Every structure is written in C-alpha cells, then in structure tokens.
Image 1 (spheres, rainbow, N blue to C red):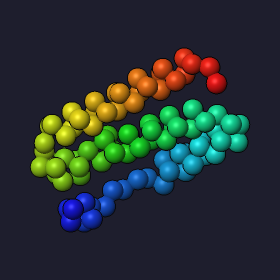
Image 2 (cartoon, helix red, strand yellow):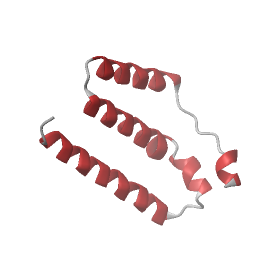
Image 3 (cartoon, helix red, strand yellow):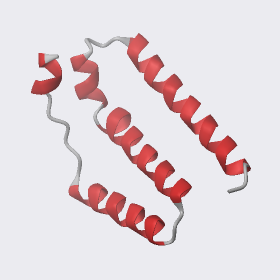
Length: 88
C-alpha cells in the first residue's frame, strides 16, 4: 500500500480542462450516459495510456494486471453499448 501512496500521476491541465468542460456540457443537457462514458474514457486514457510507464514500474512490469485492466475496460465498454441500445 505504501507504493501507491508514493506515486504521483501527472495529468496535463489542458486535458483536465477539456474533461471538466465536456462533463459540464453533458450534465447541463441531461446527457448522463455521455457524461459517464466521457469520465470513463478520460480515466482509462490517463490511467493506462498516459501513465503506463509509471504504473508498469509500480507493478513490476506484470502483464497479468495489464490484461485484467484491459478486460475490465472492455467489459465496461460492452455494458455501455448495451445501455445505449435500451430506451430511457
């Protein structure tokens, strides 16, 4: 647990501003599903793509944890697609 407390994950300010702007826009127009998928996509990008080297170092290069992360991400995308196909 101490390893997680010592890690600092950097997120560029312009990406954070874009995330806040998109989320605010979708919430103002009551597009909850779009707001949730936007939150997921930004967190997935920040967590896996942008900070991949930091997380890989933290987990000692374990490919199993990467596969679990990707599997959970794909499962979530699948559930979002199903949710979009249903009516409100």
